[in-house]
Length: 374
Image 1 (tube, one colour):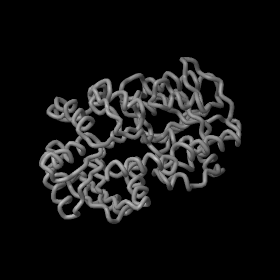
Image 2 (spheres, rainbow, N blue to C red):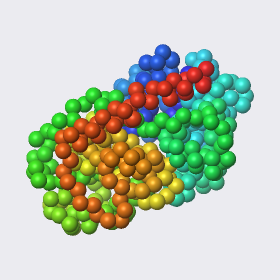
Image 3 (cartoon, rainbow, N blue to C red):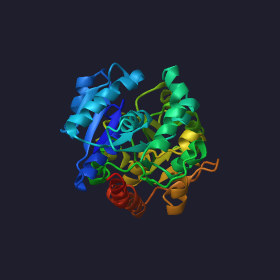
Image 4 (cartoon, helix red, strand yellow):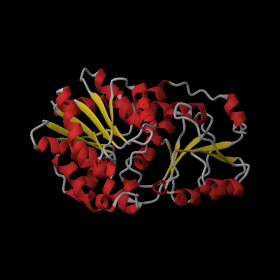
C-alpha cells in the first residue's frame, strides 16, 4: 500500500498528519510506503527532512512543476510498478486524481481519498494563488476524488456533509478521523518551565492566551482581532503570545498593547514547552465553508498542553465538542471573563486528547480503513 502526497513540503503538520499516520498504519502490520512528490525548490533539503523521519520514504521532484500534475502520473505509475503496490491512499484532491487515472487503466486496484478540507470552497473564498486552469477545474477534480474513490477519510463529519450537499455523495464508504496529535507531542512533558515564563515576561497573575499557527487570510486575523483588542483592554493581566512568524498585523497589535502582546517563532518540537506556559488556546475564525469543515491540528495541540480552547462558532466539529466536553468557551459576541485554569482543569484537557485525538484513540477507524482497502 502507498500513502501518496503531492506538492506538500515537510512541516509540523506533515509530520503529524502524514509521517505519524504512516508509522501508525505500519504498526498494524500493514506495509505502507510513503511516496512524496515535492517541489524542485529546496528539493534536497526537504527530501532530507522527510527521510530523517521516515528513511524508507520515496521522495521525488515534481516534473516540471505542480501546475502540470498530469505529467507526474507516469512517475507514480513507475513507482507502483517497481514496488508492486496496487492500493493508494492519496492525500488531497490532485494526488487522488493522479491515482484514479492509474485505476482507470487497471494499473492499480483501489484508491482512498484522504480529504483534508473543502478545497474548491477554500480556493474560491480565499483567492488561493493558483493558475486559472486549476481554479476552473477544481470543482470537477474534487467531485471525482469524492465520488470515484473506493474509500474516503474525512477529517470532520461536517466535511462529509459538504460532500453530500455539493457532490451528491450518498455512500457510507468513509471514516471520520480528526487531525490527531503527533505521537512525539503526546510523549513530551508538559510541565511548565519557569525559565520559559521568565523569557515571556510572565508572572503568576497573568492569564495568557496562545495563538499557534499561521495568520494567513483563511485563518481570519481580522475576526481574531475583534476578540483580542477588547480582551486586552479589559484587563492588563490578559496577555497573548503569537507562535507565528512576525508580520505587520501582529506588529500593529504589539504597538497598541506593548506589554501584553508577544510574538515568538519556534520549531514544532519546541511548541509544547511554550504552550505549557500559557492558559488558553485561541481558535477563532470567520464564518466560511472552509472553516465549517476544518479540523485544525492546533485544537488537539492546545488540549495536549492543558489549554482550554476559546473557539468561534461552526468551526468543524469542534465548537460543539468544546460545549459538550466543557473544554473551553465558544464565543457569543461577548468577551468572556476567564479564570486561570487549575491543575485539575489542565489535566482534564490532556485526558480528552488521549481519549479522542490520538492515533490509538481512532484505532477502530484505521482498522476499518485498512479492511476496506484489502
